[in-house]
Image (cartoon, protein in one colour):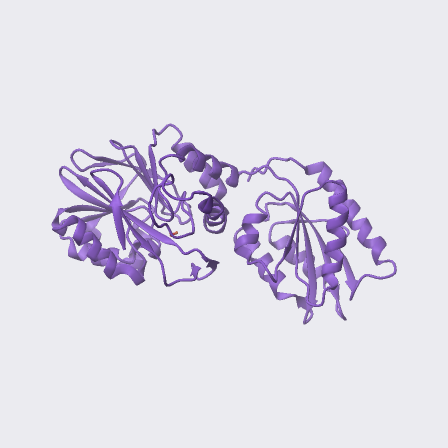
Length: 404
Ligand code: FEO
């Protein structure tokens, strides 16, 4: 557990997670994950913003004691977001801090009860633009629901112009040797911030855009998220990135497939080659190699999809089934057109494939075709017809706004 200063009155505390290899037990974090928490020392009391994951609660509490000294000085524990990666330490910190109150968005107390059992008389629910004073520091609350839970909010410290955003503007990846965007190799975090956004918050694009609209007139000198680096040099860049990720300009075709014996690979290679000849940008993604976490991020801007779906046990081959289910769970089909090719040994499943892709929010194109084993005879003609339709459709929609 490390700590450092944003300025004389505001400090960060950081855990570089060495335990989990998957964030939310789902998303790969080969470069690790940070959990950041913050302490604001006002002239009339201290506020703590968010906390730590369960594994690190002891370290976290010890670090708070080391920085604060007497825990009686803590007046407020601000919960910008209730999820346990930030609040597992909070019940114990509240017990140890007799004068502290929990501050949470108006949407939070009911959910908080299910997780943490905070005594009702120690919880303050706040509305948009409510403020609390720490003497020479003022905290203003910005209710920003559904980023990515219903109760999320941000806290703006007015005197130093710091916006504390929890998950929003966060990133996968450990942060070491520095904390600020201009102290670390930000290149390492740019892709990981995008992947984090699309994986964790990307289902709620319209809420992201509403939240950004709410803070557009704020004078923000520092963005302090609860994962990844703190932004002080590239504040406007990360906000702009979020706008683009939430509402992208669509371009290119994503071919998403898996292949057990190479037959589907022959087909998608042929399609890739024909689309490339036409100058259409193609991302060909083998789901046996790529985790859905990366696929979601890679295809956020794709305007048209081609799903290569082999039959497996009279159903959809599992890597593709899982990927489509992830698109569905995350509501990331966005009515984008999708062509479908099914390969099979003895059972075509084209209707099942169409229904499944449609259920994930894509618009299924025709013709959707099944090919027995590997392409032969008239299959080349059928595939060419499908590719012609893709080229035609792509010309119609290319460069469209990804308004979501
Ligand atoms: Fe980092 Fe949604 O918690």
